[in-house]
Image 1 (tube, rainbow, N blue to C red):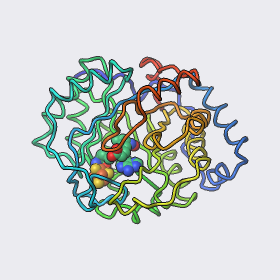
Image 2 (image 1 turned 90 degrees about the vertical axis):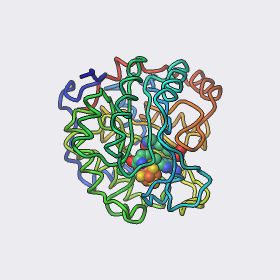
Image 3 (image 1 turned 45 degrees about the horizontal axis):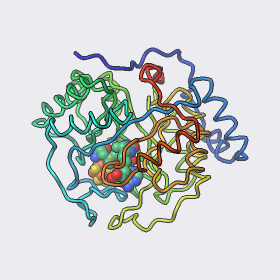
Length: 335
Ligand code: SAM
Ligand code: DTB
Ligand code: SF4
């Protein structure tokens, strides 16, 4: 078996898993400066505040997905411009991954528009994992629901992280997805955890949820038996042709509050300022970093939508004094 770059047992058990809903609501209600100060103080106990982990995404199988996620460009239920494609070959994945590495990414995240992978695809997926690792990059996959055997197989190939989001609160979830349940998501997360793969799990802000739902989403994550090592907080990318294509914009400061609360509840996790950076000003991104975000997607494409230009990102990091996080520091994974 290939080794993973991080392990789930390295850290002392210093984080809480018994947060109450009122405590989380209270955090969301705090005066902004007090909240950011608390988040930044906690952030500095566990991380270098000027280092940001850089991942790059690739859609290895695009569109035609049978799930009905209301935000997604790739759902067959939504009439978007995205064209469906078959699973990409390892050779193309490798070329793209090498380019991402050359441009400064340390982790390569491969996403497929599936409800779940088919067993016949598992060998090709494992081949991608081991080949990308051989380039000296960390690997992440997001393929939908997994069986125990599939999780074990990916773990055996050396997969470092598996991304599977809860997306929103248990209460609001049914408004966004009807083709699989919140519990299905938790079950996959447990299988990933049991296979010894680091968990990447977060959600989306801007689905029409209430602040209470943002609290419910973060409370669910923070009270898992282990905090996800990586917590992506996505700002909804409004895609034409999806039911949420015309959703109201999110107040930037409310988005920053969500990042800050995630940082306070899960002090040792990497909090990723995930989708939506393209729609944010430099100032808003800077506030997100101040609130404790320390991971981003680098590269001009997310899965099917745009991410900031390389040059714009380079200028922003220069202005903010942000350095890429070396992989060995990342290894201080959440407990
Ligand atoms: N099909 C797999 C699944 O749903 O688990 C993997 C890919 S899916 C695109 C991964 C995650 O991306 C979703 O759970 C959602 O949180 C996020 N996402 C998808 N479309 C988005 C959008 N338009 N804006 C923000 N986040 C989005
Ligand atoms: C996550 O939480 N965000 C990424 C990753 N996990 C797979 C995906 C963002 C997708 C944004 C919309 C798109 O590009 O299709
Ligand atoms: Fe499919 Fe994932 Fe998009 Fe949902 S989020 S429609 S499961 S690709």
